[in-house]
Image: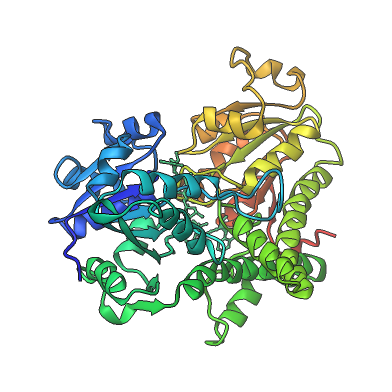
Length: 479
Ligand code: NAD
Ligand code: UGA
């Protein structure tokens, strides 16, 4: 078993950054280099002010403060850091392909392939290459082929050698540090026992050995996308039942509690919300759909595709419902949006339900005032594909602003001033302690509060003279 002195992670994103920070923290004798082609991102990782790290994740900045410059380094120098590494983690993005074969379903592996070529070019001696990115089954084969082909014409002591392992990451954003420090399991798939044990030796520094699972490489790759598919399937299931609750007078929270008490079902991942977002659920399920179709398993592909279809339908259902409640038109009405991130405790907006719901509301002509404690106006602008309206207007002009526009609000209370409706889309803690009496006075009547996350207390809102809608609550008879 190799004694690991130096590791390199290619990709300083939502996985690479937190994962390597925790490894550096738990293994102070190992030098951890995180490299990325994105200079701006690396500069942010190196920024003196820890508020400016590119990723917001509770607990991350204190680890970076402890380890950066000691055994944790962020750099754009791929060549030197690949050359000195005993183990290289590939942690780059693997989004759904936009064009060509498999477009709309298969993962685009061009970044992974590029990494494999860079490792082939710059590495020295023997290197363990670890797939940290979520990859379709059999990708390890591609990486291996690229690495081996690079050595086919080399003979003697200059010939490099490689082992390829799969070590998928199961962290969830917002709880990444806790998930990494106390994982349910660490999964390592591979063929070479010695390489597996070498990687295991790193995790053994803080993870109990019985939680480190060894499988063959294909099981490991497939287990990762299957885990995400099962989690997403639970959300689509509960959201489908939520719609039925609204139609029948049942309450989705009560149904979830009742079914979740059954140990075989379990209580986690049964919160009905505005639909699942995040960079991975949709991408990984579509990948599973592609894989199933590729192997001629049409029924399997259709089954998993329906999880995504239900999610799309559910997001549309929410925007339609808002329009319906506001007398069938929201043209030039002010709507306050609380939360743009795809979940609380992250600044990530990738595939956030807020993007689709806001786009629908803008399309209907609404004027949106968007608040999120961690998402920047620039990010919202990129996601909505629309520039923010100039801030130079007063409240009297509010209802004559050009329709279908948006503005960023630092304050929840300013965002709600004069609004016809408030829509909660992310479950940020601060939204559950809003002073409704104060807000109620400032909204245009009749006004609505739409709680897509079930975090608000209905009584307080009703007492403030506001109408209230909560996801999956049939006592309001939505239909
Ligand atoms: P990300 O987009 O945040 O980060 C990827 C980084 O890789 C980017 O900074 C990009 O510049 C860099 N990169 C791309 N090609 C490169 C190259 N050739 N050399 C150097 N750097 C390069 O993505 P992410 O959210 O960290 O996800 C990475 C992988 O991990 C994906 O496969 C994803 O499915 C998987 N994953 C993500 C999460 C999550 O919570 N985000 C959790 C588990 C697994
Ligand atoms: C998810 C998985 O939970 C991680 O295990 C996995 O590593 C990761 O994807 C990945 O591969 O990227 P993440 O997307 O960060 O993590 O966050 P989740 O907590 O899973 O939430 C995903 C979406 O589902 C969010 O929009 C969230 O609001 C929604 N959700 C979650 C619900 O609507 N209801 C729930 O009960 C739980």
